[in-house]
Length: 185
View (cartoon, helix red, strand yellow):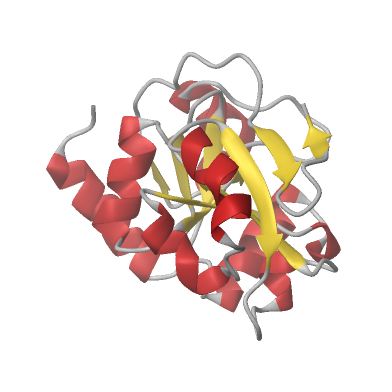
């Protein structure tokens, strides 16, 4: 686990519009403030990722993600809530007026309650969910250590939260909450 001091420093970078790299369940994530359009566009440019693909948000709990999505009925929400925290990302209807830079060309938003202790602590320190995409250039293998992030992305990231990734060997599963369809296994 990283120190509270390091989490506070990362939160300051987050609130100043900076880019963070941090460990998740399987790989290092690259993130920023989801409501800061300049930070998100900088992240997309760094990754060479088109805006229309949309992004994933991670939170320490569903309460952090709730303002960004339209929850479904109790029966439809049950599988999501039962799978969290954990490496399970769900597509939920995007909240009315959610910026395109988050949802891309979709009517849904990908969200996950992380079970990685450092990623969750970072979300709590920032008092916000984080954009979470793999810390690599599009088409390149994802980084699984702070050193690999530094080698791949160098000084283009404002802060790396150095801690080990979780034990998952694959990125999170992505499912559509309305249909149950698996988008990424």
